[in-house]
Length: 233
Image 1 (tube, rainbow, N blue to C red):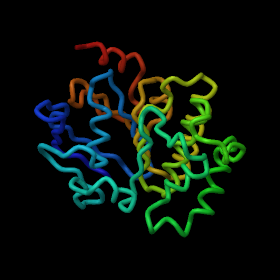
Image 2 (cartoon, rainbow, N blue to C red):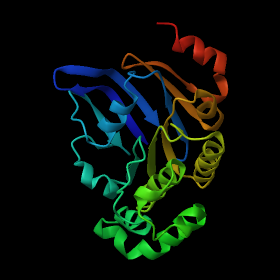
Image 3 (cartoon, rainbow, N blue to C red):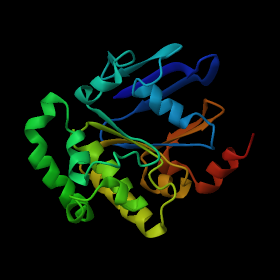
Image 4 (cartoon, rainbow, N blue to C red):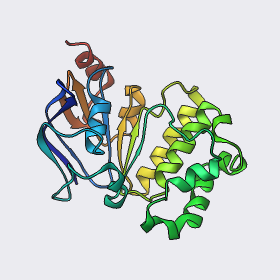
């Protein structure tokens, strides 16, 4: 279990997260929703060690995670697919994927995980020798997700995967998330498309102003109620 307890974090003198407490259960998909500026990406950065905590703690299976350098997160079983399809544009698709298994412990499994990535994302196999900068937005998002899976993470963190994509590609990406969930992968999903997030999630957190405004099983949350809370303040 990944837990955040009374976490405060931000940028310099500006605090963004205020006493945030969350729990992500193994093998489940946890959706984090909220308006722009609610603190969703800041939360993910805090989990991944990109931002130091000002207060509180983050634990993984009861052991402190905060304070772990970002480059050691793969060894702790975490991988993040950042917002904006951040791929290495001047490297090939295959090279981008191999970077995802750069840590020493994962290098012996590169061939098998490349094959798994190509099986899950067939278009990446077709384009494996192309420069990542030549991919379409949807293909780049697939590459970013496949690269995140190359370390075989226990917890996959995905930030705004549908942003700027056509509906057909959104359907494809959410189908892959559903498949990963069915395989028992623990997933943390930040997503502005609340309808899609609710449909796939096991648990939903709504962030407002850097605070948790809702924490509930997704099956008990209607879209109308979520939108009412969205615009309450």
